[in-house]
Amino acid sequence: MITEQVKTQAFSDQKPGTSGLRKKVTQFQQKGYLENFVQAVFNTIAPCKGKTLVLGGDGRFYNREAIQVIIRMAIANGFSHILVGKGGILSTPAASCVIRKNQACGGIILSASHNPGGPDEDFGIKFNGDNGGPAPEKLTDAIFEQTLSIEHYQTIEADDVELDQLGGLQIAQCQVEIIDPVRDYADLMESMFDFNSMKALLTQGDFRMCFDAMHAVNGPYAKEILEKRLGAPDGTVINGVPLTDFGGGHPDPNLVHAHELVELLHGDDPLDFGAASDGDGDRNMVLGKAFYINPCDSLAILTANAHCVPAYAKGISGVARSMPTSRAVDRVAEAMKIPCYETPTGWKFFGNLLDAGKITLCGEESFGTGSDHVREKDGLWAVLFWLNLIAVKKQPASEIVRNHWSQYGRDYFTRHDYEAVDSANAKEMINQLKEKLPYLANHGQIIAGIEIDSADDFQYIDPVDDSKTTEQGIRLYLNNGGRIVFRLSGTGTQGATLRVYLDCYQNNPELLELDTQQALNELIQVAEILADIKLFTGRDKPDVIT
Ligand code: VG1
Ligand code: CO
Image (cartoon, rainbow, N blue to C red):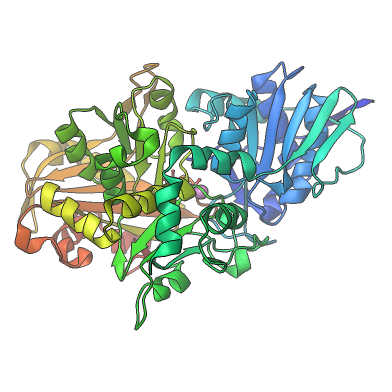
């Protein structure tokens, strides 16, 4: 085999964001664009000789082409073993599982997660390390450095590998193995949850559910686990075939984009339980009968009830949530006398805490929940966790949530997204807020009748390796128990996306069932007065409210 050194031009825009490098497909199709980034990854983790690499993606447009390019490059760079999901498919949590199970040095996951797919839409690539988790900032910074000065990449001349046939193929020093993308993951799930009780729930009573895979990667996983192993009726999984453009939709499991599912949980003959996951299978939305479960509440409830699940029956060591996530889980941790960590947005910040055994469960407001079983958030895992709770507690989802609120109080939470706004204006808005911080923090300002207790720009020092991450969002604490957070998204591919997070605690038993937007209305006013959102975004309302 002859390794080719291909001369290439560096690109200046390959800095990974919250979760890998995400760009328009057309950008990835530029000559050398994908190759440069992949070579930068290999240079950073070198030497690759003799190591195992896991490779797969969410099946979106350009997935298969990119996989062929990466296989050739991985062989040229000296890997001795490449594990590729059949059809180029691996959900993000399954990739994490496969990396860990096979002691791989890491994996490359091709996904832009919840962003739409197709020739004019988004593509993405991220590297996960040997713990199965997203590369920490040290590593993504080093990869970015490499992309700035790269001059060559290495590849070989070889035919495309047949991705749709299980089995191994020796190419030069490397064994390329096409693996079942579902089996290891499904086995792991079966080892963690009370499948007997769940099977009884799904087959013996009148409980009816639906899982919306949104034509994204989780279809085959959900069919195997829910329909085959747990015996749910055929058709329980809808939109179960992964499509390169996700059927034209946004594979983002929220009330706006998963409307087909939402309709099945309402109306004359609503189902008992519904769930959906995103493009790469790491996010989840869970719904009870005509009842929405906020992801912040979900994390708190899973924590409070973890003892009902065999994998956590012996207890949990601690929990973590991303900063913008509501403080509902903090209240549970306090009652359980376990530590609760507050991290910046993005799963990469949970890795050290999980590896060090400081936490067992963690989550984000953005429909991400997970545990130490892998090092990624895990959509189907969260759905199975809820089914396990419903089965053993013998209560509908809504009752589990209401009981939780009556015990701990309720943290009303909402996120307002202003998508694809002008980047300069968005930055200017955040800068203005930063300038106001010293004043807001010290002067007990009263805005729209609410006093501000404190304000800061969130920074995080990792308790395991002391690495410091700054400028992670402007947060304001109000003396009515409310909190407002402003930050710019790190996953968008067009302009800037402003996220405004609002939450407020309520423990008056009479006020636990309010409409969320109404409950948070005062805070919404304060956010507008403080930040001039309408002016800077040019929008009179958010594009997406979750
Ligand atoms: C968003 C979410 C964040 C999540 C990230 C990746 O990031 O807010 O909580 O970890 O997406 O999720 P941002 O920077 O756009 O706010 V996934 O499922 O898109 O990999
Ligand atoms: Co995702």
